[in-house]
Image (cartoon, rainbow, N blue to C red):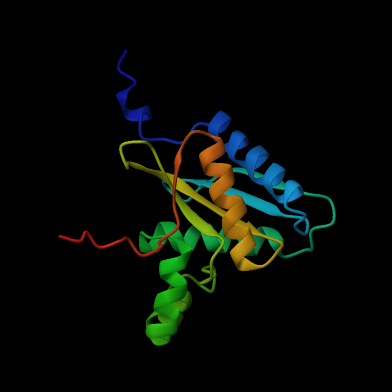
Length: 157
């Protein structure tokens, strides 16, 4: 039987590893309690973990960060940048998604070593900057590549 169609998916095991590594990073850095949402490439919920003490809307916020990344095709840093440059566009996308997109850092795309998109992670609970650091730690801790949407360096020469 050919299972090649499953190669570009995020496994449940990998999603759990992302959550474990992200929460471990948050604890070691003394962050506020975090909520971590992992979505597969379709935007479906793959796994979710919330530390004790997270507030009510942390699931929705973390999911909104991950959904924005998947829906627009880039990490939260780029979404945040575009919100500053073209707020009307990001607001329009927010309306199209019935307000489900959260246009700040803390969402990252999840890629494999070859750059293939597998899904997205969103974290909420601390500052957006710290949420993003925890998301990157989670993804790299699972042996995958986090795409934050940070500007890529321009090659000199």
